[in-house]
Image 1 (cartoon, one colour):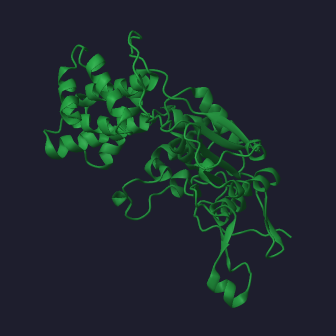
Image 2 (tube, one colour):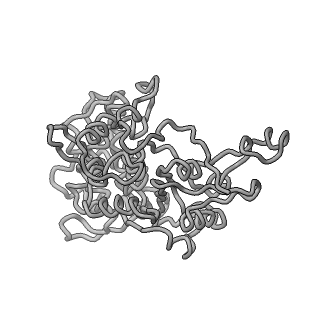
Image 3 (tube, rainbow, N blue to C red):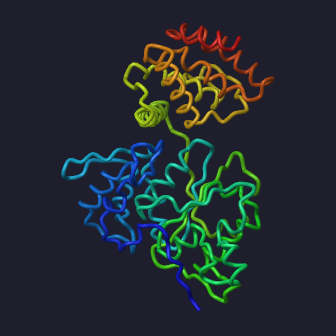
Length: 388
């Protein structure tokens, strides 16, 4: 027997439904600190849907071409500018989008800070119009978070029944033909991870307590993210890994690309927090990115000097955090212009994770590289001040 679980989301219309209607911001959206992608970029999604005349998979809000354009950015025939959500190789995005149009799930793999969660959210928003069908993986994630749970008041009063069953985000996505997300899959205990095997291979979720099952309808798929540096609590079993098409998200290829990524995200975050942003801070952003890349790579940008790498990841995401914090310092305790003293403490906190070993590495880098670099004297002094 097959049973369909009703979703509580409002985005279950057919593939021709208006994106602007489904992505309309809820009441009080202006007060939300971080709107979901489908709300924050509703205008872009609506513009893409209006001009997208390419074939769409069943229950997709946009065609695969439009989904890729939404992530990578571009200009539509009517002049509408779509901002890039991901700066990186186009082929990676195309493979990820194509995977979601097949019967294989997508695993986004990469070191911390390579925008795995960001890409996952925007893919779900563009494909299904809803990025909130999310399971957050932790060492304590239970099986019920992936399968289903029970309303225990109903269960005790009436026994197992449809009314007592509480569907998980994955079950709701299966029932409605939408995209589910599982974040930090490798942090979930191995026996809970394997709950996904039947879902991904048979497209079925048994409910033995009711003698029923939920069968996924067309449009269902799943995006998982995993960290390939800090492997989390449990690696994936070979049986589960075979159910995924793995796409590795790399670190930015060049300093210019990373500066562009950091600048864009800091500008977005700054606007949401009413922080000043502008071209005056680009020099400090470039310095932060340069420091992070050199310590991460173990060599200076010119290739002449080898340096030791600290224990931290020094990812693009951490660079964004350092610059954003610096902007807040500049706004509330400075003149609103990002300066070396505003980012120095953040860099120190990102680099020195191990107080003993990392502090020595940082001091050596300051004296051997930063001190001798033309135009960096003010940056060197600010870093020395917070380091001492």
